[in-house]
Length: 229
Image 1 (tube, rainbow, N blue to C red):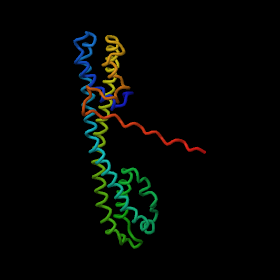
Image 2 (tube, rainbow, N blue to C red):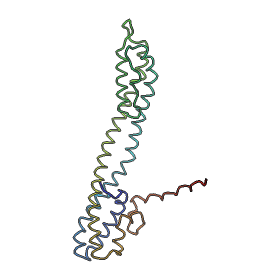
Image 3 (tube, rainbow, N blue to C red):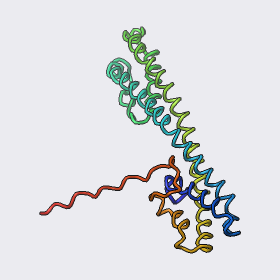
Image 4 (cartoon, rainbow, N blue to C red):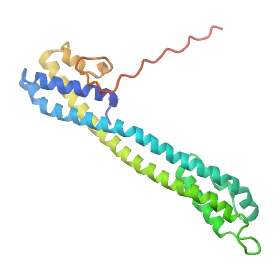
């Protein structure tokens, strides 16, 4: 995991690549870093951009999955009191007790459908409202299963991309630290290229910035002054 925020490394990567290419012929020590700086900076850029591009569909799928689970829970809850009344040992409080966890909601929905399908009256007949309950529950359950399965698949892909991005960023960060030290040794701490590659300068605009790089976050507005008592 890189210690520098990913957005800063994404802003520094194009600068490092251009500095390495532009100054490789000035010093053998700088030239020794040029190929690896370019390769690792490029990998950092590519992985970060792929992650950000996938973020919107990931958020969409996760929202749809959670929404479908919430819709299932909304259908489940009205039937619980009747089952508490009519099915001995049925504990309505065990159903939908973790509404923020879609897997649990879907699992509860599956159990509820099974209870409704199998429960009988004292005379051994199906519950009089079984068909009506299943007509509501089964479509909602199937939709929640589908949407949450798609969300989980999207989340798995997103987490894989996130891991690859962190790895590429950490590799680039290690390379950048060594490259900056070389520039400082060759050209001095006041060198313009050395300064622009410092993490503290990532939020400042530079003529070699990549237009598609993430913009610096907006400044934090100061809080209101303390009340005078």
